[in-house]
Image 1 (spheres, chains in turn red, cyan):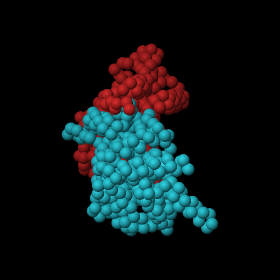
Image 2 (cartoon, chains in turn blue, red):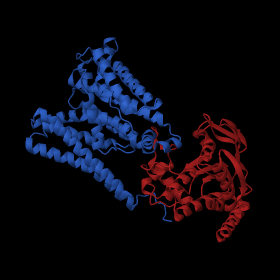
Image 3 (cartoon, one colour):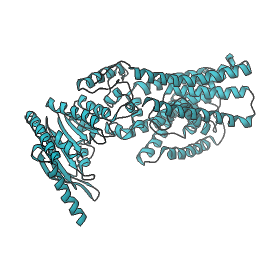
Image 4 (tube, chains in turn yellow, orange):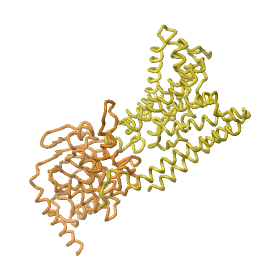
Amino acid sequence: MPPVSARPSALRSILNNFLVWREASVILVAVLLVIYFEVTNGNFISNANVVTLSQFVAAPAIIACGEIMLLICRQIDLSAGQTFALAPFLVYFGAKFGLPVIPAIIVALLLCAAIGLAIGLITVMLDVPSFVTTLGAFFLITGITLTISRGFPATPPGGPVLAGILGAYGYSEIIWALLIVFGMHVLLRHTRWGLHTSAVGGNEIAAAEAGIDINRIKVGNFILTAVLAGFTGIIEAYRVGSNDPLAGGANMMFFGVASGVIGGTALTGGSGTIIGGLIGAVVLGVLQDGFTLQGINAFLFDAIIGAAILIAMVVNIRLLRWQRGGVQ
Amino acid sequence: MNGGAQIQGNTAAAGSGAAVAEPGGEAIRAEGITKHFGSIVALNGVSIHVRRGEILGILGDNGAGKSTLIKILTGFHQPTSGRLYVHGNEVSLTSVDHARSLGIECVYQDLALINALSVYHNMFLNRELRKGPFGLLDHAEMRRRAAAALEDIGVGVPSVDVEVASLSGGQRQAIAVARAVYSKARILLLDEPLAAMGAREAGLIIDLIERLRSRGDIAIAMIAHNYAQTLDICDRVVLVQHGEITFESHSAETSVEELLEIVRREYRAARRA
């Protein structure tokens, strides 16, 4: 029998190269897009545009962190964009009822956690596909946001320093995003929670047989996703300087999911990377920002973005199959 | 007839192997286990026991109740009635974790491993090694120990870093068994360890099982379909039919023909009915 080796073998290094190359290919796409837009616009890499670009990237990148965890354990949260819109109003009303801003934010995030908990419990206890549960939650939360806001925007509470830290300062949103991406990367790759999430998505029965509480993992990731979506909504409101009851929505959620998938997360569960999700968000941000700078026809804008996402996802899925086939 | 002689020879060898390991005490005993699923009686008063250093073969048709029995021994199902003893003490297994804490572990044929995870992650699934104040996974130490544990029981894989998906069925099964043994399992339940396996692959697993028996501290019960293989490997066999044990014997004292005859009688009875 061949000796067991703890060092990376030839096969492993080939596999590594594949993986590195795959993420590198997404990075390459991002770089090519940047070069294209820089050549055609001339000021794509200017400081002002990098700030704008970072703001396109930040929110989907954070939403992607949650959705990637859910996709890995074969779930999805279609209502993340709705929680995103609701959370700043929860902060607003918390402050209105006399809470200081930071406790109001904490209460708002706890309420978002409760939303995630409810979605998760309905999904696992009643054995409803999360696609259905969160589709229901999508409309339910929209209704709640519209009802409590009466459909009007509101100004986020708090002074300029706090607002700056939370999102009003140009780079603060991307800094939050990078911190969260780092934390979530550690969670996925270096904690039991992350490993168990991959295990549940890879083979639910085997994970259960190993003694992993699969319902706990799923519910926990719904909570995580809802809290991250709520937090993103809050910092986005501070960046814009206004709570918008129609912010986020399906667009925000799908940008999060698309970021994950472009970055290599399998829609069939079991595998995915947070770093890939960040790169996916950068690709989407560059596309949005680039086409905006080019002054593309507003009616065509969504069609072009949609086509670009479709191409990126199809290429990703083909690459994934090819890679799997190549390893076996 | 030649085939029969061949089998007799093999069972004699297995019997002498058992004699060496015989001194081991009783590791697990189930008495009068009955299990109802609603109105269906899956098991009806089943009693078995396995000693340390012994391999018990559990034979029977699909739906006879073998898997239900194994799942009761692993704490996955709770019996409707009956008693369980582990190392001589009566226990009521409340969960898989509880059974595992008593050293009972089951290796399932297809469900054992997570294909998308590496060998070492699978080896340490749900008992990961951690380090530092934040309890982060200690990948390096898990890698090292997984490689050492596999080498120790003679399981060869290219590297502990490869995805399990890239390994053969026999290698996967061996890793699942190695995982159980490494985690201090002393009552090892194998659910069809040789099903759907070629001769070479099966040989790998049989070698591994026999190495584990020769350690003398592990009690093994395996579900199987192939009578010849089972009599060859196991010290004793029981036959489960419609939720009851209808036959029990030392491997050396029975034959494939005798087992087949019992099963044939059941088929004939079933066809008449």
